[in-house]
Amino acid sequence: MNFKSLLILFVLSLSSLTTINAQEKESGRAVIKTKINCDHFKGCETGELNFKANMLKIKGVKMYTLDEKSMSILVYYNPKKTNLETIRTAISKIGYDADDVKADPAGYEKLDSCCKAA
Image (cartoon, rainbow, N blue to C red; front, side, top):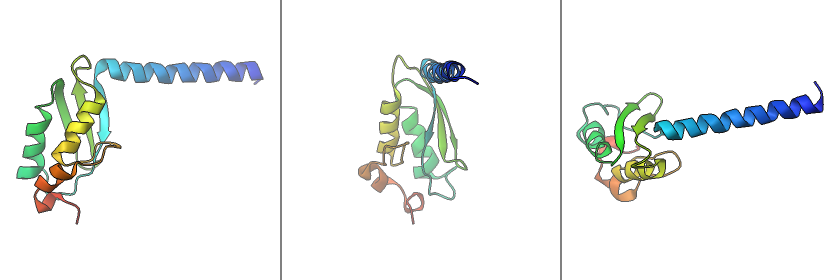
């Protein structure tokens, strides 16, 4: 392969990554990494129930799925009403990490001891 072919391949790869990122923002779908310490999160009052109540209060969040095993949250949201930083901050205020946004200390303190790191 010559230099020109490599350059074209690189530009095409870069543009496809940008397109994927733009499509994700337009669709309002994102995966947010978190950390769940509770061994019985589903059904836990300050775990699942508190999390659910607060997630649905975030303006623009349509739906979410929490995957305890992969410690991630798949969020569907309306990008005209909210953005990822707002969602991450709201998750932090509940007491959980959200990607690079650490759990808010006040929110973390409200969690039951079972939901806190040992």
